[in-house]
Amino acid sequence: MIKLTILFRKPESVADFEEFYTASLALMERLPHVIRRQAGLVVGAPGGESPYYRVLELYFENLADLESAMRGPEGEAAGRHLIEHAAALVEMYFADVYEEPGGATPTQNPAPVERPAPPA
Image (cartoon, rainbow, N blue to C red; front, side, top):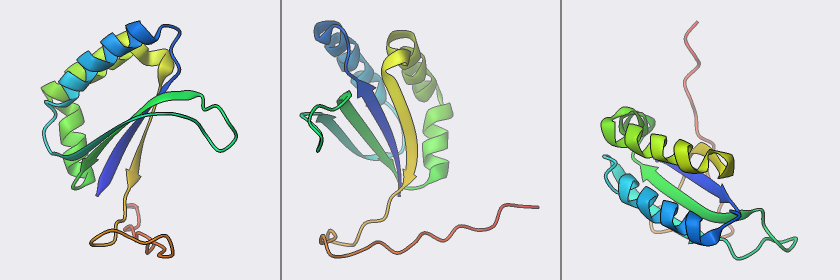
């Protein structure tokens, strides 16, 4: 499973950000191949205050599905909206996610993901 994580730094205007964020979520709801969504409001960090305000995570079955969603018209529209309204607030990354069937317990460690060697 592949996860796209979007981290939003604290905005100057929460009201303006929330208006953007609501519109952004509506655009991302149209992305194909999304199998799970998680949206979070950051309430703190181990050291106290976090530099982040919101976190959005979109899960895809595989990297090909994520790439297809991002390159399609829905992904392009969502990306444009994000860049036009919040480029300075955003960090994004893709992660290869491992989950135990039925949920992992805190004592379980995920198996390393084996990747094929890049073509020569």
